[in-house]
Amino acid sequence: MTALPGTPSIARFSTAAPFWLSLGLIPIAIVAAVYGGWTIALLPMSTWLLFSTLDAIVGRAFENQDTETPDAQLFWYRLITILWAPLQLMTIFGILFYVSNSGHLSRLEEWALFAGLGILSGTVGIVYAHELMHQKPKLERWLADILMTSVLYGHFRSEHLHVHHRYVGTPRDPVTARFGENFYRFFLRVLWTQPISAFRAESAMLARKGLSSLHRSNPFWLYLGMQAGFLVLAAAIGGWWGVFLFATQAFWAIFQLELVNYVEHYGLTRKHLGDGKYEHVKPRHSWNASQKASNWLLINLQRHSDHHYKPNRRFPLLQTYAEDEAPQLPLGYPVMTWIALFPPLWKKVMNPRVKEWRARFYPEIKDWTPYKRATNPLPR
Image (cartoon, rainbow, N blue to C red):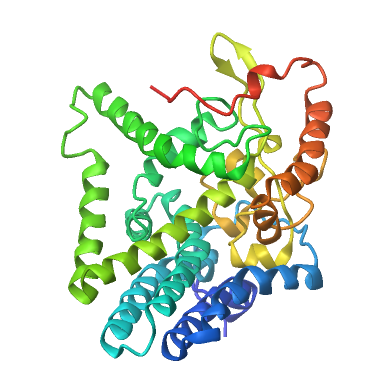
């Protein structure tokens, strides 16, 4: 029987199925909440450790899908990102209700459990939110806001769309890690510069319309309201300890987000053309990784070179590049983010690669001093 035009087929689901593996984290989280103890370790083991191992087994994927594929044929890819928001909220608040009323876990176990849930909301939730916020349908953008505010980081949408993509690879982007800057310095820097740069970007857009930065259309009101709502719900379920546990999962989700941000652009800069202008963003301005399994987990986020080149391209259509077009990470994000936690090892692995990238793409630049600053002027 021939499927109707635009009707998703089983064949299409089979190609999208590996990206649905993230759903397996939900029953694992439930098992950890019920049994506690060593089972809590299953959450990090089933994400970073498992997919790092799978990367070593299944290798890399260099195939590129047709970028003209219509959305109707991407149904099964889009569906998992749309379903994740309600599933994540039910999982986190359901587990919070369960542990608050059962009392079978120690305080330490409860903390560790919600730190583990931060892996779920960070590794999957934020990555899916990132995909959704780049799309045009209002539903998808709304779901992105739900996911980001559920980790108390709602301003990320404004910063990512209006600052990061515009200023990536320049001193005006808080999220571009400078050459020689270690992760911990980067993390502390972006925690306070991102909200400020995001608010200034939204204020500038409102000013062009003749509106105050405090106008009700400023999405910061939405971010604050939704975040307050989640905190109130956590308090209603588990009191102040419930708020602490909810904030714990949010912190570790944010930690993972910024760890990935650190890896994605470390040391890569766009050429300054003078008069405050920079060259257009190209695939060479993001680190690329083609490891197959970790791209299943991160819905092709590691094809970051193409994402910045074509930001609105849906994740199954993101392209991978050869070394002469985009710099390549030696390993996938799961391993590279662990390496980033150890600055001497990170510099040993990555600094030579940054220098090689400079020599390959910008042999005419002899003085890189202006690009070495670990601080940046905030966008105005």
